[in-house]
Image (cartoon, rainbow, N blue to C red; front, side):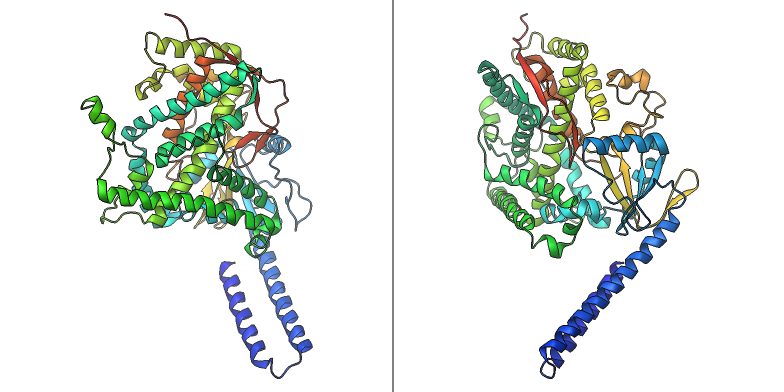
Length: 544
């Protein structure tokens, strides 16, 4: 289809050139008629190609069950909704088709929806060399995130992955735990103040999103934004971009760049991108200049030297690590490449983690027995400590809290689905074949709610993740961070922040339901319509 579009574009250029040559000899009306004829011809050819491609995919996907459609042409267009009812529709698909089904968004896109570990495993474990991020779900992010690790393919992706992997080494992540503690302290101080003022019912998403942004700005740029207490143009731009991406995805006419960039929403997107890119570009350029003059910062946790010596050392942040990274040929990332990766880290790191934390607290507010058990585990760990700060080594000493976090990630996965395309036909169980070019929609939500894998899937039960109960379970039954070579590179970062924030929150507050009906809202991450409101009760630190 891309080749056909290129040929049609070339034909249009040739015809327009012919029109310019004839323009001195032709009247205006003749030129208008010729132009209209050319446009009509091109549109007709495009429609024919589209219908031919749709017929081919429809034929080749007959090996998959097909849910009822409006008609052959429109397919399931308009049926995939980012609402509570949309998630309930996924539940019905899973109960009806068990493992997979075909899905057609009009004649435009042909998908296979998969929601069983045996079917998603061969897709997610496929080599990165044949795996492609599709433009339907990821293309709208490209003007914001550039050709970053999230959106790149092939050898470009492989090189970036090799260069970025050291930035998520355990020795690096240890340094971030201190930041997680500090950002949590700021949020909890604000909560105490609000509770004292009689405003104990709060929207978790609004507070926790700012807290995770605060953490990421410190981890990525060593930048103290004070965003938990005051607004900034950069923070507002990130929120604006996330909202606009969702809005564009839901409007089929805005899928065409020529229409979107001329719309008011497209202009707002460009303006917000300009703010975010300007901030990141300035930081990268300033930091590269600093490295040239001051040398490398500490790249790991350093416990040697006196207090004065420690104060003089600056621990490397994400930007430093990217600036210092080199491939096997000694080449590093350009400023533009670093900007793209930093923007992606900010995009992928704050919303997903905020969603995860918020839903953990929601689920524990619904189950006071589990909440009390987590709190006792945290209090036992911090007993006889002079400080409430958690260390990296503490995180492995919170087994039940971790089980509660994992069960929440199963029940309320921050990311509902990931999509892939492949450069060759892909075989899945039952002798079925997904043709090259089809979009594979791996439903994380559907897999996590599949009753064949998870009995009583809508029940919150942390004991599912007890080591004894996990024996024999498929490795792809639980995939909140995807899986395989293109899994989430920041999953250990996210799990560390989840543990720290949840543990400190439960030590300092009791959470109960806010009395507002909760309706799930699966956008870029899983949110709640109107916010996720919980009631906070301040707790005093246990006395020894």
